[in-house]
Length: 75
Image (cartoon, rainbow, N blue to C red; front, top):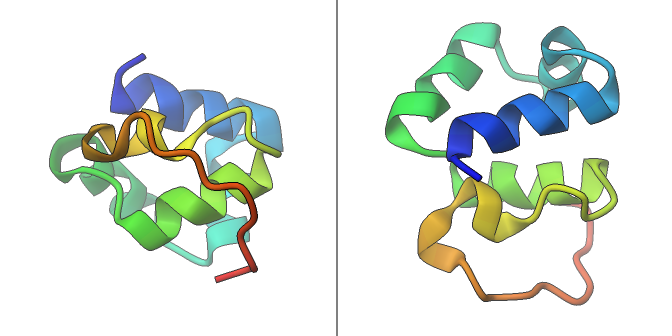
């Protein structure tokens, strides 16, 4: 799965891209930037929590693929 596909899946799971932005308290422009520059680690962890693990850290940050977060406090 590409980063863009992972972002789209996360958006679908929470309802829409607008809803995902609202949950993360970010602009739509910021999310679009992630598709080119990558998702910040903190935001990737938040998305993993919001999607109950359906979208994982490694999906959003390929450099962390294979790392499994067992328990994360809300960041």
